[in-house]
Length: 433
Image 1 (cartoon, rainbow, N blue to C red):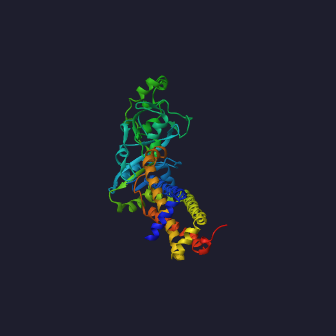
Image 2 (cartoon, rainbow, N blue to C red):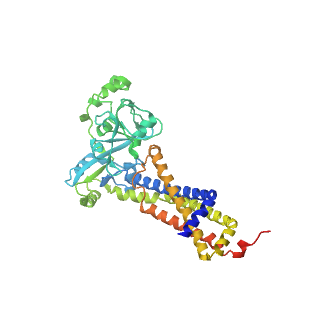
Image 3 (cartoon, one colour):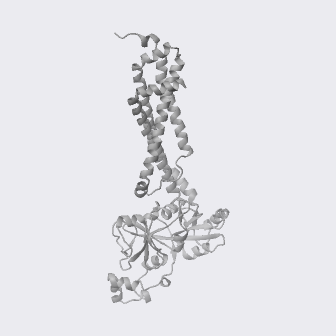
């Protein structure tokens, strides 16, 4: 207890250098914990892009590719799933619900997805979060379209604005445009921090209508004048919107999400789908595939953690340097302590206590900086980088880091302590000429 009081008084006498040491350690600690928390948030955002889904089903490909183009709107698909096969699997008694997905078109660099009401009812991300609307309603009519928050933010669209879809996904106007069949925005979704934010959603019948022929026979049997009339923006929009979804029967989809009645049935159903005789299909478990993909991408997180540890080492080295440089000014102090009965071990313990106090102060201040920093910047980070800083503030990893930093800070104090312990008594009391 006496040594602790001496250590605190010694730090108080050197308050300037002590504060600089504490600040350098605190910034290092704040950086380590910020990197760890952002890495955890990024992992959660990535692996929880879709939840409460047992299987993702598509044409035969790799599980990774299937998840990439279905969940993240990345890559390309090799084939479609026939509507007949989809309905056959959907009608199995072990299936609770499905969400069909139809891909292939885009709008100014954003993916356009055809789906149905099940998407708005059953799609979940980050546990139990569902798709919500900033304004408007789901795209259930043939010519309705719902836009994600990032599409709304970048393209400045409003409710009721017309949207022309291009064949393929390009950043500019596509070569083949469906400009004779514009959609109308019926809803704008709230931010989710997933690929949904960068997507547009239409109905499956709308996807079929967009690709239907407007040339001959009934709907396909219109005269050239009528066809030209469709290219007139105002009249064309009114006329083609008169056609109902019964005229546009769905023939195929790209993939679909599936939830079983009982999780125990998932593996059996996966095997049945993978061995489906009507056409080659693949059923992937999204949680397993996403976890494997994240492990492949986690090298960046390790690199950031390594940089943070290097910064901490620099901070601890600065503390050692401060204590060592201060020893020259404290030789008389050490000698007086020795002369009144303090042995070499007590001198060693005194300086280790000083380094421990400085380290604990730096850790505490670093945690305060990290907590307040994220409380202020969390909304901005979510808006800018599309992931939420949520969940537990401290995990077992963070607690381990705290203990490891305090132990390391105490141990590096042994370096100046060992030097001080070896100082001769007469070296400190001798008069300097």
